[in-house]
Amino acid sequence: TQLLEQSPQFLSIQEGENLTVYCNSSSVFSSLQWYRQEPGEGPVLLVTVVTGGEVKKLKRLTFQFGDARKDSSLHITAAQTGDTGLYLCAGVDNTGKLIFGQGTTLQVKP
Amino acid sequence: ETGVTQSPTHLIKTRGQQVTLRCSSQSGHNTVSWYQQALGQGPQFIFQYYREEENGRGNFPPRFSGLQFPNYSSELNVNALELDDSALYLCASSLLAVTTGELFFGEGSRLTVL
Image (cartoon, rainbow over all chains, first blue to last red; front, side, top):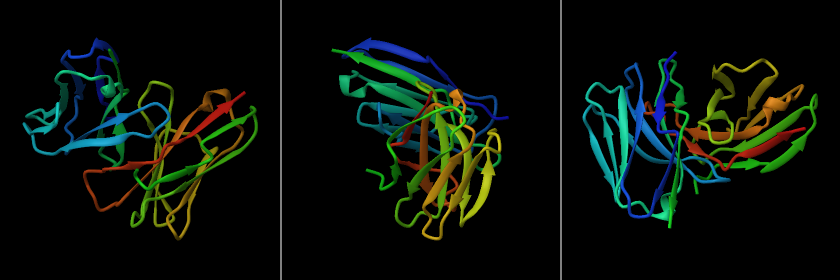
């Protein structure tokens, strides 16, 4: 069974601080995705990384796919209160279905 | 907005009852996946439907069943509800041909079982 493990599970920081969320697996994934979910809403896709070593930037968010395609990270620079939410990594498993990590709950305090 | 709509948004049932949740997929999408999400956790895959046929199932008992209709909308049925079935049920639509598996989620149906 392929698993995705995220760390940390919970993060509480002050506005303006930087943070990194990690997504790790012992299995190789053809691609990994990052979603953000706000309370009362469904997850919304932020980015898909496909190539080992790939780095993608989305404003203050930087996503990296590990060289071996087993891990990924999300770095947020100068966090804002609007970044508060549940961050989920996801990958297509060997049955072709999208599986999720357990999520990282981020709280950014003003 | 993703164009995926779910109903109802909230509902309360008692143990042993049955529930039906509904999902309308995004226009042009032929595949619907259902997920169960406990509070503060990642979504767990229940099953996927493609062209009205089940196309993969997660580790959920048979009392979780589904349907997909010719217009690609879908239903999730849960029989003999248990307290642990309380969760947010998410529907997501996609194009099966997209191998990166990108999904477009609805806002979910929050089920509380008392």
